[in-house]
Image (cartoon, rainbow, N blue to C red; front, side, top):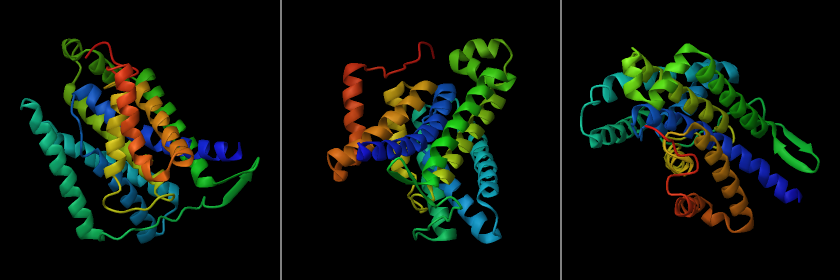
Length: 287
């Protein structure tokens, strides 16, 4: 049972990161119908900005995270204004090609500026905690708690603020939102900003456990796409629950089946769930 609960904590840690990344991805897709393949690059930049600000200016971890969130959110807005907005009337394939181009460009830029070596992010929460026979670092607990807080703040923002209401209105009925006078450009910029902020938070929380390197967003974004398909395209609850389902499945699968196949679990899970429910667990009723 101790091994089970140990892997439960690991699964919740993984699921928290996956859910935050998938949330940003599903927000953009649900509102703008843009499959942003460059979202993995925003995740990668979030880790690098936090690390470099901490090492270059000797700034505390939390202040570096705030700075990273602001920088990546701004980059996401620039991405929307300079790339996706001019392509809004183009064939859908153009968005996908542009997103892949941004991904490759940002990865090459990071390698040029900071190199391709793996880097370790030092955290003030690396102490080990023993609780009820379980052993884990405070950073893992911070990932879970930080992700839950970010999700609650996002929920409050979307449900209790005027700007959040416009985002929900765009997601539910684009044509109706236009007729009500909602500014589509402002909603698009805000959506990309939130998406970038969530990616930066996820990377900043996860990087002290993992490592920071140019390709760190590849597998995460691939699994994030699996999550939003499992949860239902454009569904915010689906992104959260799907992220935790995948995180727990990977953690338990690596322990009780084989660690060599843990990255395949996401795709096996995708096939099983879509076989049972082809539209995903929380498919949206309207687009």
